[in-house]
Length: 300
View (cartoon, rainbow, N blue to C red):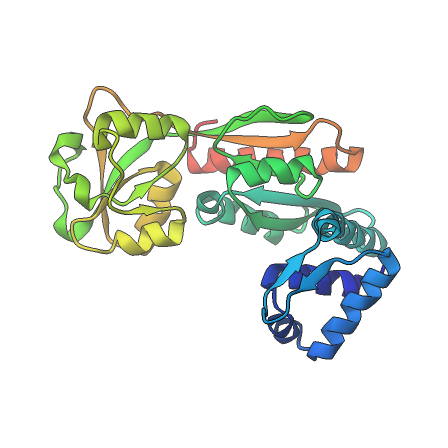
């Protein structure tokens, strides 16, 4: 298979449109169509269909099967190039949830990449926890970092980080107390983030009473944006609180209620049957991660 053809196919899957694919790849639409035809001819099966009167492309059943194969094929091509260029360099694909990549892990990545004595080449991606399990299962990610402990065949999960939860307010309209009871907060002003299942249960029993929050978000950037509004508040783990304090004016309190929110636990997941080179890369990353967490005073 030709790498350009495979990359074009995956871009078509992403955009579902030939025009957008051509724009993203800086080629003409006929070139995109030609590359797709070459790939389909080589595989001997149709991958995409375009219905009359519809600009949106759809995957055929064989096309759906080929997507994970194409992704793995490109990953192997990248590894092959790395093998040719630097035989002593270890390759590692790391997948994290949004709030990990946007907060504590971005500093870890920077530290690793700036230290020339650490022979690691990183491929970093952001996904939801359940997607990371699937990606690790399908060899698309070597080490995933998630908030949910799920049972997957051939996947090993180990807790690597425990974080206390805090009550965070927009500073301008904050109730300035070192410790705050949840009953002191206006539930309609909460910016709710679903951290994990145990937190959801605690939140329903302690705050929402089974009612949905008026505002729910699922990324760090959205949490940060809405916490700029006067009177807004949220409950967040320490790493998120630390990052928020660097970029905006917030007031942080401990939760005074006897029943505390459960700590957010981060699990590292990996396949149990990884290659020796992957084991070395994961072990090296784990060592750097633990050292970095200790430097910041986080509890493993």
